Amino acid sequence: MSKLLETLFYGQGRVFSRPFGSTGGGGWGWWGDVSALSFGGTDEQAAHKESYSGQKSKIRSFSIGGDRTLKAVLHQVDPDSLAQQLRGTVSEISAGTVTGEMFPNPVAVGDVIKLDKPYNVSDLVITDSSGSPVTLDPEHYDAYLEHGSIELLSLPTVPGITQPFKAAYKQAGARQVAFFNAAPKLIQLRYEGINLAENNEPVIVEFYKVSTAPLQELALITSGNELAGMSIDAECLADSSRPANGPLGRFGRYVKINPIQ
View 1 (cartoon, one colour):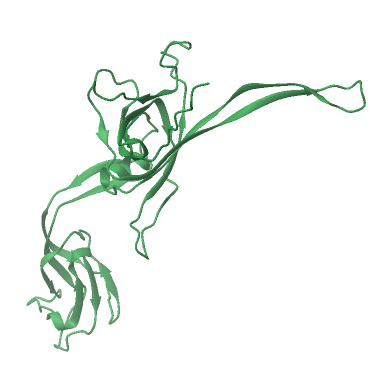
View 2: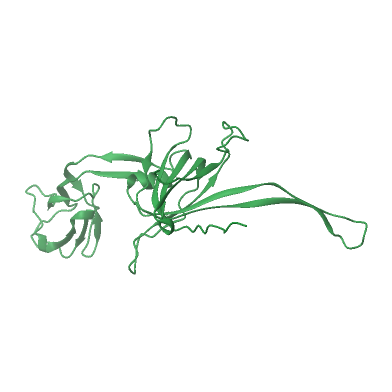
């Protein structure tokens, strides 16, 4: 008897996806840093127990299908990755200048006002509504310009101060993601990995038809020494356009690449 060759696995690598139905070698997008990727499945069984012995012994048990699932943790947190995992769309906000933006009327000391264009605000000037506008000195408010947030600390004592106050400022551009305003989309998934346990042996794993659920969790406030990650679940579906008994199957394939000769 030949000796069993021990093969172990410790995987690292890159994950790519593209819309289901894509053809050719292009159109793939890299998912960035993915710290966990796992594949598994469940088996649904049909069974029958006899009724003639008094023992109700199981005499038949066979598979009638099952689910194939993927789990991943993504660390690339940007508008495009969020849109993909939250079934959303990305839109652009242009930089610009705002004049005469009205504050609520009235405002009092301690109030916090959020500007309409809160994107890295600069050149902020706050005035009142009198015929000869009075400008609020910076000592009257705290301005958190990166978020367009203003907290009133005091009010001018100039006679005839007239509310509402008005803001003029410049704002930077931005990219925004609307959550859950797009239909779910099927994707193809491809893992290009190396097996550190076997001298960095290259492997490829492909899943032909994947349905992703919305991300399970994204920590918006983090602690400790770990970066935030997006935990997602996905289901591997059968690609019926492929032959059921073909060499590549209908769900996916694992490729162990041989060394260069």
